[in-house]
Image (cartoon, rainbow, N blue to C red):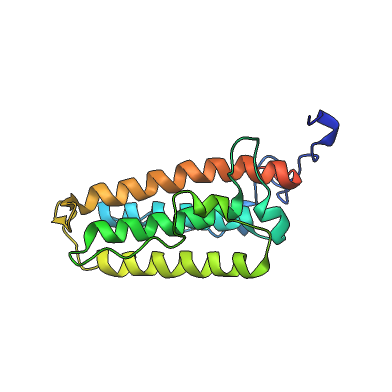
Length: 189
Protein backbone atom coordinates (compact mmCIF):
# COMPACT_ATOMS: atom_id res chain seq x y z
CA UNK A 1 0.00 0.00 0.00
CA UNK A 2 1.35 3.43 -0.98
CA UNK A 3 1.19 6.07 1.74
CA UNK A 4 1.27 9.79 1.11
CA UNK A 5 4.75 9.94 2.65
CA UNK A 6 5.92 7.46 0.00
CA UNK A 7 5.06 9.88 -2.80
CA UNK A 8 7.72 12.18 -4.23
CA UNK A 9 7.41 15.86 -3.43
CA UNK A 10 5.99 17.92 -6.30
CA UNK A 11 8.51 20.13 -8.11
CA UNK A 12 9.12 22.03 -11.32
CA UNK A 13 11.98 23.77 -13.06
CA UNK A 14 9.79 26.76 -13.82
CA UNK A 15 10.37 29.89 -11.78
CA UNK A 16 7.97 32.31 -13.47
CA UNK A 17 4.91 30.09 -13.04
CA UNK A 18 5.71 27.47 -10.40
CA UNK A 19 2.93 25.12 -11.52
CA UNK A 20 4.35 24.83 -15.05
CA UNK A 21 6.80 22.32 -16.51
CA UNK A 22 9.13 24.99 -17.87
CA UNK A 23 9.32 28.75 -18.07
CA UNK A 24 7.72 30.06 -21.28
CA UNK A 25 11.11 31.34 -22.52
CA UNK A 26 12.57 27.83 -22.10
CA UNK A 27 9.62 25.92 -23.53
CA UNK A 28 10.40 24.65 -27.05
CA UNK A 29 6.67 24.56 -27.82
CA UNK A 30 6.37 28.33 -27.39
CA UNK A 31 6.83 30.70 -30.31
CA UNK A 32 7.15 34.47 -30.40
CA UNK A 33 5.69 34.67 -33.88
CA UNK A 34 2.14 34.41 -35.09
CA UNK A 35 0.36 31.08 -34.96
CA UNK A 36 0.19 28.78 -37.96
CA UNK A 37 -1.86 29.85 -40.98
CA UNK A 38 -4.55 27.53 -42.26
CA UNK A 39 -6.08 24.26 -41.17
CA UNK A 40 -3.29 21.91 -42.24
CA UNK A 41 -0.56 23.99 -40.61
CA UNK A 42 -2.64 24.28 -37.43
CA UNK A 43 -3.21 20.52 -37.20
CA UNK A 44 0.45 19.82 -37.85
CA UNK A 45 1.48 22.36 -35.21
CA UNK A 46 -0.75 20.74 -32.57
CA UNK A 47 0.57 17.28 -33.42
CA UNK A 48 4.18 18.48 -33.30
CA UNK A 49 3.63 20.09 -29.92
CA UNK A 50 1.99 17.01 -28.40
CA UNK A 51 4.81 14.84 -29.70
CA UNK A 52 7.29 17.23 -28.13
CA UNK A 53 5.30 17.26 -24.88
CA UNK A 54 5.56 13.48 -24.62
CA UNK A 55 9.32 13.67 -25.10
CA UNK A 56 9.60 16.40 -22.46
CA UNK A 57 7.69 14.24 -19.97
CA UNK A 58 10.25 11.47 -20.46
CA UNK A 59 13.43 13.59 -20.41
CA UNK A 60 16.03 13.03 -17.75
CA UNK A 61 14.70 9.68 -16.51
CA UNK A 62 16.57 6.42 -16.16
CA UNK A 63 15.36 3.22 -17.83
CA UNK A 64 14.03 2.11 -14.44
CA UNK A 65 12.01 5.31 -14.04
CA UNK A 66 10.71 5.17 -17.61
CA UNK A 67 9.58 1.57 -17.12
CA UNK A 68 7.92 2.19 -13.74
CA UNK A 69 4.31 1.03 -13.87
CA UNK A 70 1.33 3.04 -12.81
CA UNK A 71 -1.21 1.67 -10.36
CA UNK A 72 -2.01 -2.06 -10.60
CA UNK A 73 -3.45 -3.74 -12.55
CA UNK A 74 -2.40 -1.26 -15.24
CA UNK A 75 0.82 -1.97 -17.11
CA UNK A 76 1.10 1.65 -18.24
CA UNK A 77 4.50 3.33 -18.00
CA UNK A 78 6.21 6.21 -19.77
CA UNK A 79 8.30 3.74 -21.74
CA UNK A 80 5.15 1.80 -22.58
CA UNK A 81 3.57 5.01 -23.89
CA UNK A 82 6.55 5.62 -26.18
CA UNK A 83 6.32 2.06 -27.50
CA UNK A 84 2.53 2.25 -27.78
CA UNK A 85 2.66 5.45 -29.83
CA UNK A 86 5.28 3.92 -32.14
CA UNK A 87 2.91 0.98 -32.65
CA UNK A 88 -0.05 3.29 -33.23
CA UNK A 89 1.89 5.42 -35.75
CA UNK A 90 2.62 2.21 -37.67
CA UNK A 91 -1.06 1.23 -37.53
CA UNK A 92 -2.07 4.63 -38.89
CA UNK A 93 0.46 4.32 -41.68
CA UNK A 94 -1.03 0.93 -42.53
CA UNK A 95 -4.46 2.59 -42.75
CA UNK A 96 -3.34 5.03 -45.45
CA UNK A 97 -1.28 2.72 -47.63
CA UNK A 98 -2.55 0.33 -50.26
CA UNK A 99 -0.07 -2.55 -50.01
CA UNK A 100 0.16 -5.30 -47.45
CA UNK A 101 0.19 -3.92 -43.92
CA UNK A 102 3.45 -3.91 -42.02
CA UNK A 103 3.50 -6.30 -39.06
CA UNK A 104 3.08 -5.08 -35.50
CA UNK A 105 6.31 -3.69 -34.08
CA UNK A 106 6.12 -5.55 -30.79
CA UNK A 107 4.24 -8.66 -31.80
CA UNK A 108 1.37 -9.75 -29.62
CA UNK A 109 -1.36 -7.54 -28.23
CA UNK A 110 -0.24 -5.26 -25.37
CA UNK A 111 3.43 -6.16 -25.83
CA UNK A 112 4.10 -2.43 -26.25
CA UNK A 113 3.28 -2.03 -22.54
CA UNK A 114 3.96 -5.53 -21.18
CA UNK A 115 7.50 -5.69 -22.56
CA UNK A 116 8.49 -2.11 -21.65
CA UNK A 117 11.29 -3.18 -19.33
CA UNK A 118 14.01 -1.19 -17.58
CA UNK A 119 16.81 -1.76 -20.08
CA UNK A 120 18.69 0.99 -21.93
CA UNK A 121 18.59 -1.01 -25.17
CA UNK A 122 14.78 -1.24 -24.93
CA UNK A 123 14.56 2.51 -24.25
CA UNK A 124 16.85 3.35 -27.18
CA UNK A 125 14.92 1.04 -29.50
CA UNK A 126 11.60 2.55 -28.40
CA UNK A 127 12.73 6.08 -29.23
CA UNK A 128 14.18 4.92 -32.57
CA UNK A 129 10.95 3.06 -33.39
CA UNK A 130 8.85 6.11 -32.56
CA UNK A 131 10.98 8.46 -34.67
CA UNK A 132 11.00 6.07 -37.63
CA UNK A 133 7.24 5.46 -37.54
CA UNK A 134 6.45 9.16 -37.14
CA UNK A 135 8.68 10.00 -40.11
CA UNK A 136 7.11 7.29 -42.28
CA UNK A 137 3.52 8.44 -41.82
CA UNK A 138 4.51 12.11 -41.98
CA UNK A 139 6.21 11.53 -45.34
CA UNK A 140 3.19 9.69 -46.71
CA UNK A 141 0.73 12.32 -45.48
CA UNK A 142 2.86 15.14 -46.91
CA UNK A 143 1.67 14.05 -50.35
CA UNK A 144 -1.87 15.18 -49.51
CA UNK A 145 -2.69 18.86 -49.23
CA UNK A 146 -6.43 18.25 -49.57
CA UNK A 147 -7.56 17.39 -46.05
CA UNK A 148 -10.82 15.95 -47.37
CA UNK A 149 -8.99 13.42 -49.57
CA UNK A 150 -9.85 9.85 -48.62
CA UNK A 151 -6.84 7.55 -48.67
CA UNK A 152 -5.71 4.01 -48.13
CA UNK A 153 -7.43 0.74 -47.38
CA UNK A 154 -9.46 2.41 -44.62
CA UNK A 155 -10.64 5.17 -47.01
CA UNK A 156 -10.05 7.69 -44.23
CA UNK A 157 -10.02 11.43 -44.79
CA UNK A 158 -6.61 13.00 -44.19
CA UNK A 159 -8.25 15.51 -41.82
CA UNK A 160 -9.82 12.73 -39.76
CA UNK A 161 -6.50 10.92 -39.42
CA UNK A 162 -4.68 14.11 -38.38
CA UNK A 163 -7.30 14.88 -35.73
CA UNK A 164 -7.23 11.27 -34.52
CA UNK A 165 -3.46 11.47 -34.14
CA UNK A 166 -3.71 14.71 -32.14
CA UNK A 167 -6.36 13.14 -29.90
CA UNK A 168 -4.21 10.07 -29.24
CA UNK A 169 -1.13 12.09 -28.32
CA UNK A 170 -3.15 14.53 -26.19
CA UNK A 171 -4.74 11.71 -24.21
CA UNK A 172 -1.43 10.00 -23.62
CA UNK A 173 0.28 13.27 -22.68
CA UNK A 174 -2.29 13.48 -19.88
CA UNK A 175 -1.27 9.99 -18.78
CA UNK A 176 2.39 11.02 -19.03
CA UNK A 177 1.75 14.00 -16.72
CA UNK A 178 0.48 11.71 -14.00
CA UNK A 179 3.10 9.03 -14.57
CA UNK A 180 5.95 11.55 -14.41
CA UNK A 181 4.59 13.12 -11.23
CA UNK A 182 4.47 9.67 -9.62
CA UNK A 183 8.05 8.91 -10.70
CA UNK A 184 9.78 12.02 -9.38
CA UNK A 185 7.20 14.65 -8.47
CA UNK A 186 7.69 16.78 -11.60
CA UNK A 187 4.43 18.54 -12.38
CA UNK A 188 2.92 18.90 -15.82
CA UNK A 189 1.94 21.85 -17.95
